[in-house]
Amino acid sequence: MAGSIRLVERVPTVAEHAALFEGVGWRPYAPQAAEIALRNSLFAVLAYDGDRPIGMGRVVGDGGKFFYIQDFAVLPGWQGRGVGRLMMDRLMGWIADNAPHEPFVGLFSTEVAMAFYAKYGFEQHLDALTGMWTVLPVDHTGGA
Image (tube, rainbow, N blue to C red; front, top):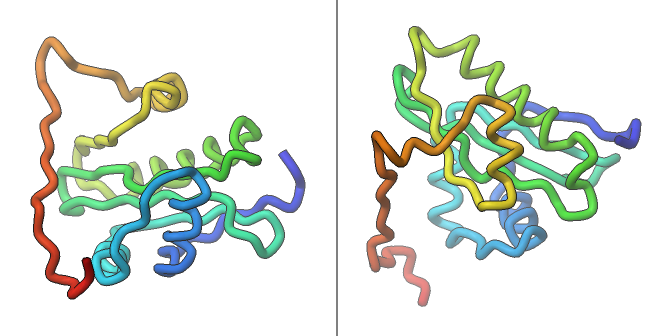
C-alpha cells in the first residue's frame, strides 16, 4: 500500500459519498436521503490517497446492541492493497470500544467480498437465520 494512504474519522459529505458510490458502480442515494443517513451515522471513516477520498465505511445502528457496517466501499484501483483492512480494523475497533456488551454486528456483502469479511468473523447463518429486507417504493424528496 502506498505511504500516502491515510484514514480520517469523520462522516463523508454527501458529495464524497455519491462519488465513492459511483466509483464502485453503485447508484448513489438521493441527496436528501444521503444527508439524513450520513447525519445519523454512529461512526465513519474515510480513506484518502493524498487529498482524494478512495474509500469509506460507516457504522449505523442503535448504539446499544445492534451495529451494522454500511456503505463500505474502496475504489477499484485501491482494492487488494490493504485499504479495506485498515478501514475495517478502525470500524470494528470503534464498535468494540463503544458497545456496552456483546454487540450484534451485521452487514450485507457481495459474493466477492465474503472472504474479506470472514477474516473479521462474519459468516452466513443460513441454518439459523435468514436475512430479509425490502425497499419501499416511496419518494418524499420531490425528485423523480
